[in-house]
Length: 138
Length: 138
DNA sequence: AAAGTAGTTAGTAATGATTCCTATTTGTGA
DNA sequence: TCACAAATAGGAATCATTACTAACTACTTT
Image (cartoon, rainbow over all chains, first blue to last red; front, side, top):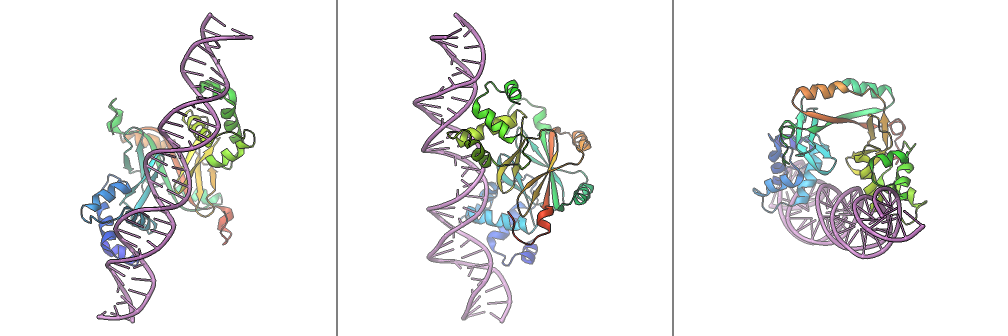
């Protein structure tokens, strides 16, 4: 875990480790601020800017995934294997979607002259929980 | 064109018409501010807030498409039939991608308990222009 | 055509997410 | 342990977007 950090970033600070490990095993796709609140319990003096800086670095290095959302803050995902996402229109939760990676799409785009690094698929609609309720969950 | 506006929005103002028609036939995926600059030539007193409000309304009503981008302002597309997008890592242009709509993905997600309204696929990489240059285009 | 009224606008302030700035601190290789 | 580049804390700044509100106007009803 923090060994992985060492491989790609010059220094392993306690803030960096805490931010990275706060995400491990979490499938709830927290926002930067939620991660900040969480890490602050261990490191009360940590700065929100530090959380942002490290989340950006970690995602640039491929140790975590940043998921931009259309109408709110980015969310972060410790799952680094390629997969897709579902955003609930009502409760705004993000779900991991486990369908096969559509590699043929990249090949098709390559044929059209683009040099593809990656692709993301985002589904929109109502999650199971919300589609069986009329209440405004959140 | 402005008849379409009338069908879905209570009033057809000159600002609304100008914003909508500024987008027609434009494949460059302009930002709200670019549209504002453009419309301002016809309506010098138009407000940026009016541009934002109408772009939001028009996209909510399905007359145009809003494309959120990970690291910058949203871009707008007059093409309303379902299609996908490519974002160039270097020049940040948005390209329309004409590959078949992947309807089977929605069906697969439906089987997994989600109620799908739509999906979007965004490809990342270098466009033709940028992959043949080393200069930092923009 | 005149009036009524609900929707819309302009201009600006406010918000929210994220990044920048800088003096200070700290991890790491020598 | 030393030296120094990298990272941090805290707050200011930035950028995109939305909220607010008094004035205005498109459209409906007389």
